[in-house]
Image 1 (cartoon, rainbow, N blue to C red):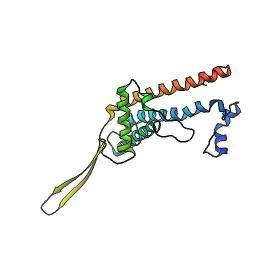
Image 2 (cartoon, helix red, strand yellow):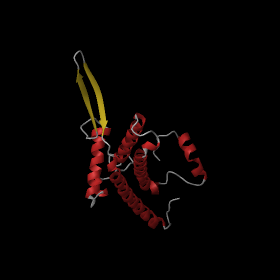
Image 3 (tube, rainbow, N blue to C red):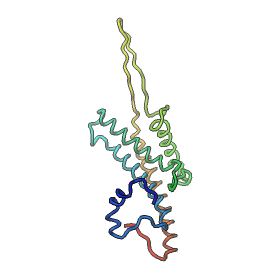
Image 4 (cartoon, rainbow, N blue to C red):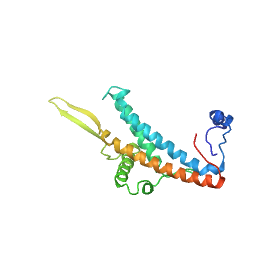
Length: 195
């Protein structure tokens, strides 16, 4: 098991499972475990999107706190989703959009939209169509007043298509996990199931 956490913290975190007889370095399941990272990123993305959609339950609508909360959650959705398709490190998998969304041209278009938002709005500053900053100028007889404005597009109407995107990716990942588990079951002659 490739670990970044100190062994004592990891052992403490997993103690109840270890005490129950689980091991965490079974090479037979190494490939299946790589899919765990993808599933967790998709689960994060789904939950961040759901929470962003309900940000007014936590802060009064259109207040700065609600706007900041919504933006933080929405940006977290974009990051978690996009990570699934990014170049991955050693021992990690990444998804291929052509594999996940083949025969789903609408989802492929929405996928490209999310990646574009990631590239132009969340990770970098470019013309994304999500935000705009304009300087208002008011000239008076003895002075000139300026006002900074920053507006964010409400893309809540796209949330259903974003949710469908995540659902489709999750279904494909689950199929891949099940296929890998089927191979292990055949080889071991034992049923493998999730608890």
